[in-house]
Image (cartoon, rainbow, N blue to C red; front, side):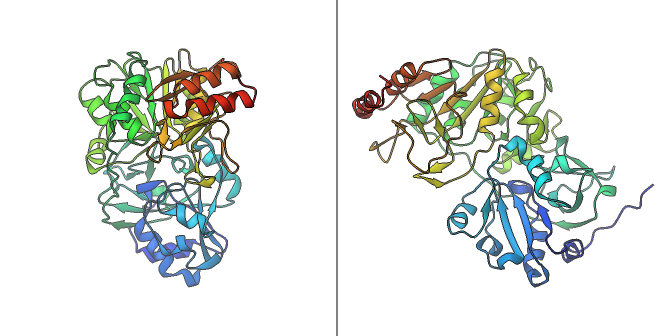
Length: 425
C-alpha cells in the first residue's frame, strides 16, 4: 500500500516547479489561492513558468505581467479580470472549443503540473475537485497533481475524484468561494425566454449558458415535466427546477436521473446544493461537451447567448466592436451536438438592440475583427424579443428575411436595404 503523504506548506510547491514549467489551474473556484500566492511570493525563483487556465476570477499581480516572463498567464477563456489584461498585452489567449481544452493542453505541455483547489480528503482518502471537473479531471492519473484542500470547497460526485496516493503534495486552506449572483432578467429577457420555453417539449435534455436570458429561460420552464440537465455550467437557475421536480432526468439516455455539468458557478446556495448531492455529477468537458455525446441524447436543447448575428446567420459571441471579450467556450460544442441529436434544437438568443436601441444586434455583415463563434451552417434558431428565426436548412434569402423579421422595427428598413444590396433579397 502506498505511503499517504501528510499536508505541507504552500511554499513546498516550488520544489516541483522547474524552469519552463507548465502549471494547469482549474476554471473559476478551482483556483488554488494559497498555492498561487506562494508562486507570486517566490517569483524570483521561477524561470519561464506558464499558468494555463480558463476564466480566472481573482485579480493577481502576475496577471498584470508583474513578474515578466518568469510567471505568465495563458488564458483559454477571458473573464472580467483577464479581459483588460489581454487587451494590454500582458497575457496570452488560446482559441479553443471547451471540449478540446484537455487535448490542447496535452499537446502544448510536455510535463504539466496540475495545481487545484479541492475538497478535504474523505474517510477513504479521496479529494474531490469540488465545483468543477472541466479539463483538469482528465489529467487524473495522467499528470502530476499538487492540491490545496479548501475547507469551503463542496465535496461533489462524478468523474472528479483524486486519491491521496495520486498527489505529489497537498496543503490545507480556508478560502471563501467567489460568488456570482444571477443577473436579474429584464422584461425583454423574459419575452425571449417565453419564446424559447414554449418550444421546449417535456422530457427534453437542456444545456443553458450563463447570463440574464439563459437564467430567464430556466425560470420559464417551471411548468415543464421530466426535463434533464446536461450542461457545461451549473448555475443557480437549475436548483429550483430540481427541487420542484421539473428536472428528474428520468427520460435521459446518458446518465439517467443525474444532473450533469462540468463546473458550477453561482452563489453559496448553489455550492451548498451540489455538496454531497448524489443526484448531481460533474464530469470532464471531454465528456460533457463532446458533440458526439450530446448528439446521442434524443431531444437535446442547447441555449446560448450571442453578441450579434449577421444576415446569413453567423453568430459572433466572443468579441465586441472587434475586440476580444471572452472566447468560444462550449457554444459551438453544444450547437453542433444538438444539430445531430434526434429532435434536437439549438437556440442562440440575444436582445434585438444595444445602446438604448441605437445599435441593432442583427447586422448586415460582421465588422472587421469580429470573430464567428457559431457557423452559419450550424446555427439553428435565433431568438430576439421579436420572434424566432428558424435558419436550419434555409436559403440565404429565407435567412435574411427571417432575421430581419426579428430585428427591432426601427432597424428593419436599413437591414432590408443592405440585404438587397448584397444580393440576399
